[in-house]
Length: 234
Image 1 (cartoon, helix red, strand yellow):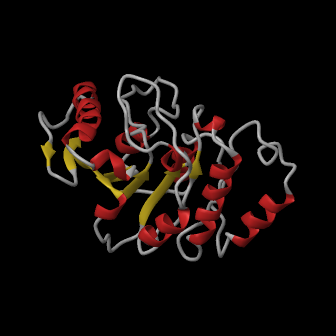
Image 2 (tube, rainbow, N blue to C red):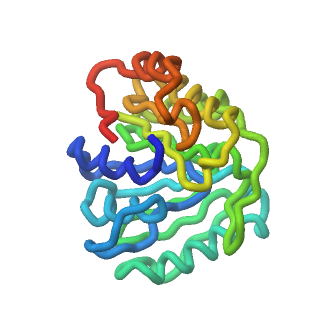
Image 3 (cartoon, rainbow, N blue to C red):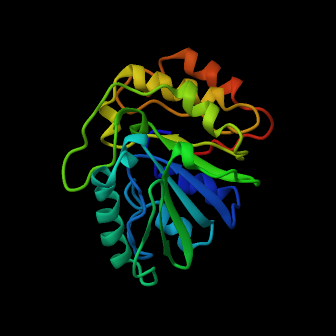
């Protein structure tokens, strides 16, 4: 999908309730918003929490974010600001070497690298932003630093055990500047997850040839990733 916030509408229209969300992204995308506020790439997880689509969140960040105490600081700063915006949230966070935990609206939020994602013995919501492939670590208060795209083969191996009804692979305004290689890797990653995990296939970032519908290979990939019911409505 072109913009990551479309994932909310996919989940809502599919009747999702009380699911665990595995959010693989260099950004948390969950700023607090009121009912009248427009849903965007920066806040779409908030209405999913408020409407009880999601009961728990695992925010999976790039591995280098958890290299040491210094690289974890941006996460702590994000959470400190985030918790102040929610009407009910934990007053503090629990910081461990490989994970940071807090709660919002009475629901657990865990931040961790992919290797520390626990074995979730249930269907989960899995969504992936291509920024995860090109931003080496979470930052705060400045522009994201970019790096060559990661290897989706490794990511696919690490998450394939987490059964999910669909995998929105989204982009953001920033990820629209990603290289074609990173976009292709994101598509390859989604295909590596099928079956049974993927039910939605990504659309390339806006401005690319694929995003303008001139790449028949993308259509072939989408058909290949649709075993059973199709939930790619966004």
